[in-house]
Amino acid sequence: MKKSWMELVMALLLIAGAYQISKEGARVVSQRKADQAVVVLDAGHGGSDPGKIGVNGEKEKDINLQITLLLKKKLEKKKVYVILTRNSDEGLYDSGSKNKKVQDLQNRVDLIHAKKPDCVVSVHQNSYTSPEVKGAQVFYFTHSAEGKKLAEGLQNSLVEDVDPENHRLAKGNTSYYLLKKTDAPAAIVECGFLSNPDEAKLLKSKDYQNKLADSICRGILEYIKTDKKSGKSQKTIT
Image 1 (cartoon, rainbow, N blue to C red):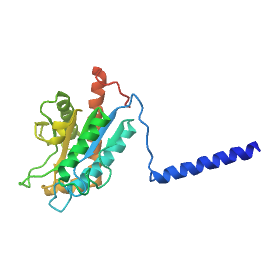
Image 2: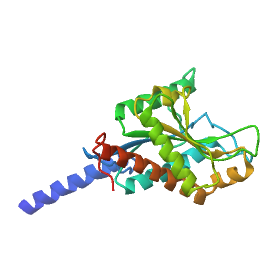
Image 3: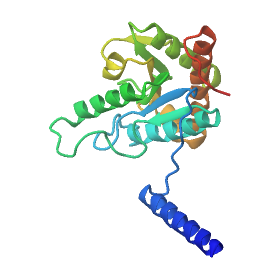
Image 4: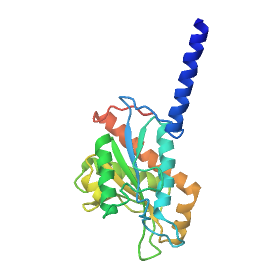
């Protein structure tokens, strides 16, 4: 009788588990540890907002998301707790919104404030009227010392790991909404120029995207470790 009762309990637990997996869309939800480093990754644009359009029709929003998802996996392997502002081709706005762009940016900032991350990295692609212009560049809010430190580390990583001939420096900015309104250290990584034919081709390549993700990952990890040593952040990373 006891065995039958235990079998019934196990069967009910299996049914409940199957229901939950179905409800969650077979999504594995990780649990954040108290001392775990937290990073918000923001894939720029999405949904009705394609961002920049490349010389061969590349959509910035797609490349942003592809690099961000690669970066997420690399950070998670280092035991960093990663939060995405989006994980699909969707914007953060209501379908009936009169100003989707404004609502989208506001919702991204609200999400960041709610999660209180150690840092925020927003992935974008650049464009310019002259097709010869190229090279990754990282931006930070001019009045944020921590944002500057994060951005400079990311810029150094991108130059060292991806393009040693890139002489760009991290640049302060006072107009980008995400940088201006976010209270956590934040950086916008413009990975390259979709207006440059050679770079646009590279940015669409999985191998190059992986190289960029490796480099950005290194920059983020070095920033977190530096904060840990200074006593500003006591978070676990490996």
